Length: 180
Image 1 (cartoon, rainbow, N blue to C red):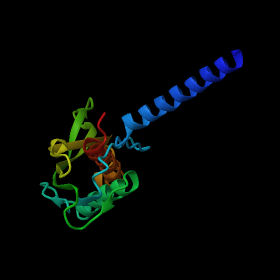
Image 2: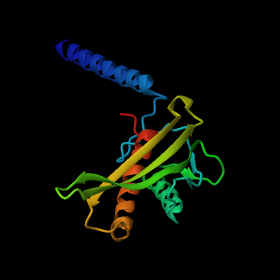
Image 3: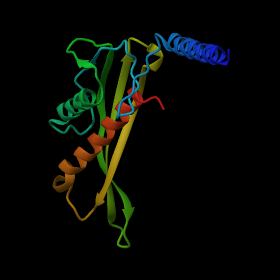
């Protein structure tokens, strides 16, 4: 009789375990959470992205800057998301313009000369999310790098531009896809 009671208890525990597993699977059925190493949180319904050419409308136009910014944003989205790039309008779309590109003195030395200059690039971005319009935005992103006034801008411009573009692209990407 004791053996039969132990079998009944074991049978009941197994049934309870199976029931709990079925309940957990049923509870989470249909829920999909996406993870990525970039921290991007993108709806699984979004399949494509598009990036329109960023026109340079800054008072000082640096040739090639529009293409560099546009390409950098495309590369970032390709590398950090599973979305496919499309030339037409995607499920998520970036468009905008470079609105500022300047350098100005920041600190003054004892001899009334600039000791440090600040090089700034600002970009206006319109992000449209067709899947979840509440995530759409229009915002200006601005980044800068300081450099010694002993240096001519032309000597450091390429390096500073690349650093600033990298920071801007990171900011734009995070605003669009990283919902912390």
